[in-house]
Length: 430
Ligand code: BJ8
Image 1: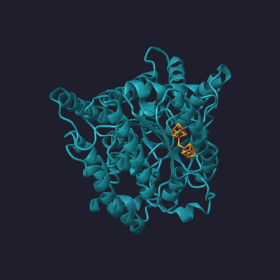
Image 2 (image 1 turned 180 degrees about the vertical axis):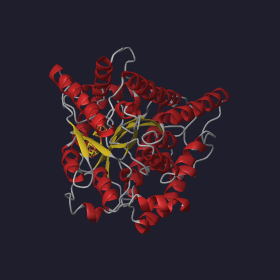
Image 3 (image 1 turned 90 degrees about the vertical axis):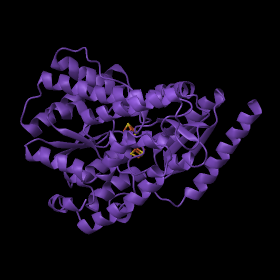
Image 4 (image 1 turned 60 degrees about the vertical axis):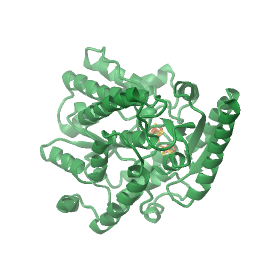
């Protein structure tokens, strides 16, 4: 990593603060990820990508820009990465998953705001994120109120384009969203000085769909029992999918899936617990937020699936590849993204139905609901999810937390109690 100091300096990072950040990451990674037993060989690539998190990939962004192309940063799965790729750009997810410069962020933001937003601003203010500093444009969206207002502040530091995301899915909303997708395409054309060509957009749709297909293939393999991959490793891959090169990522995920299929055939399972099988549902978990999955998987359970934006919500729907002209492709992109069932929508029946489907498909023993403190959409929607799961007799554990480690003991106690309860139930049925 030391070879990159000049690059970081040029990007305007605070080298001392950045050194501090790079020192704390390896031990967290060791404890949450590398300590697992019998991981698939294919995880080596993702370990390498993580080890180079502020190195090689950032260098690729810098080189890309040196050739006259752009880098665009996003904070939400509603922002269509196809458009960025079609504009010849690289799209990187910027959500942050660690407590950084909280006090500095609280100069701009209220204390009672979710950790994800506070931490994203913290990384910017502390000048420790080479990704955000590499961006020519940040694309925000009107999802929750906190983010909406946060983008106004972020706009004081860097160019920000905000997409107006409707909160319902009626025809008028679809029309608005389709026009917003075109407005973003226009903004990217302005940024690059080039028209968006149908061939580039067609290719971009294919590239992102291929990434989604690979992630879906991996998700399918998580149905295996005994499990061939842990929830933590699957989460790491999903987190990396937000910033790695999409073609390379798809290739590596597919190679890993070949290995996992072989493992399944031979009955080779991961070390650690295989049951109870947990569905994690709720807010996204950005790198390096592995707190909850690590607690669950060291408490004798397995995270078999994640119903979150750093899980299946990110890649579940594909963009239709049927359209032949630019307008048709833009509509297909808008329609695909409007299918996402984030809790900011009302009504949001699809999400509850999807959770119930996942419970069946992944042979889930209990749902652990992960809400970031002060996140209104997900904390409020938890009630509906609980109600519906109770009707079908699925155990539900609601956990509200943030990025600190102060509540690890308390969370562990609650998760262990759930695991014990499920194990007793299992014995009772046997
Ligand atoms: S599509 S989940 S990435 S909005 S946790 S900032 S909602 S207060 S992250 Fe999200 Fe897009 Fe939805 Fe996904 Fe607000 Fe809640 Fe914070 Fe959140």
